[in-house]
Image 1 (cartoon, rainbow over the protein chains, first blue to last red):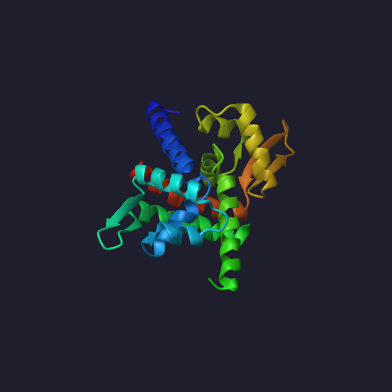
Image 2: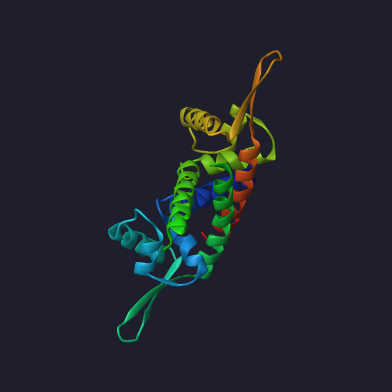
Length: 108
Length: 108
């Protein structure tokens, strides 16, 4: 392999591995999936995914916020509402994951 | 939620989780990626991915074979050659993962 090609290769490998570290984490693909329709409150996301505890969901939402995939909106109404929505980065991830989801539904 | 909808939801969750258990495992996405071009020998896959040991690659190839994603062909030439190629299930997975890869290259 040429040196340039090797560099490109290493670069690709690192990014692909990072992406699967993010989306390979349990529940992440489903959380992104459920936010694709529309912004949702914490309790709505929780209701969408059976078997996911509030503690773990809370952890995941924080990680997704840190990764710039999810945005947390505090709506100054009474009572105060907190909604989660996907960023542009998150929406594009959701579209990519849709392809994997279709594969899973067909083949697994 | 209706009972039917709940069932569908659980079904979706399980399949999506299973798919991410398969592809979230370190190196799997890259192995599938490199087999998308053409069938390759073990040593060629190994050369394609820096930092992946032969022991782990061997493990992954066995798992991918068991999951019906990869096919191992023994070619009765002299010397005997062993080649790995993607099945139809594997090729379709590769196409789905391409979308995730493009996302990773753009956003990470």
